[in-house]
Image 1 (cartoon, rainbow, N blue to C red):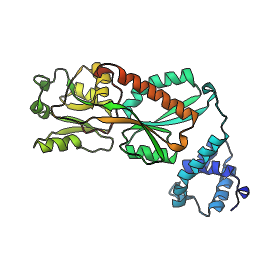
Image 2: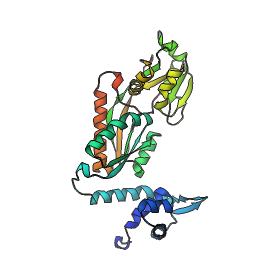
Image 3: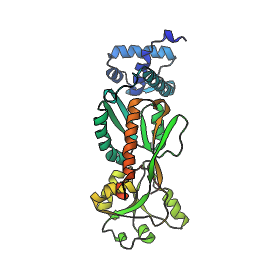
Image 4: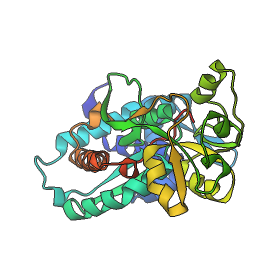
Length: 318
């Protein structure tokens, strides 16, 4: 097939159709009429020799061929945009949306200063904060082009991704100030009370439980929550105990009158990474947002004392 026989505008329409899985919504997104979008879908079907979208109940679903097209199609369109983008466009003239995968607590902690600095430096950049579910899910979103940046723990990444270490987090044991375990806190007191666990995947056991098992000890995980935002209020209102990254405990702890202790057994901390796909490495809007995230986290890590450590990621052993 010769490229000169292909209307490359079809690829833009196809990208919207595969993203929306709905002709009318894709038409609205593209500013086209529904008949024009439906006609473009027919041309795409002929071009790829596949139905691409099929009826499924009251809606439509992507065929296997369409699913396989999503990532390479998005990559082609992004590389084409980079090719055609003006050179050295001023930051204050950028008009773009940047999608950022980040956990619930970090969104609340990082978003205010990040948005404030964007308004000062690049007010035309819009941010979309997307929920973190797992590191693997975040990388898949970057691969598909559904996200531009991700803040998480990435032990390893494939060559197509770029990963930067922003800092290290340690853990503290947290509870309400007048908790009975706070008096003479030790391993026995720690394990005598029910725990709350943060797990983005719903797991009720982690590396900490394996470490306790090696000591022939066990804890009761009474409550499991998907993110950090609920933990301080739970601790303040109950006899629950949590092991939290120091940044989370310090940032939320004082507002709920919590106290913190070093874990009674050694608990390994974890790194916090910023990641993006290599095809977005030269996108000025994404580079600028990444620079601001880097600056903010470095400032937070540089402040003295546990009360100022940065936000952390919900994949932890506690």
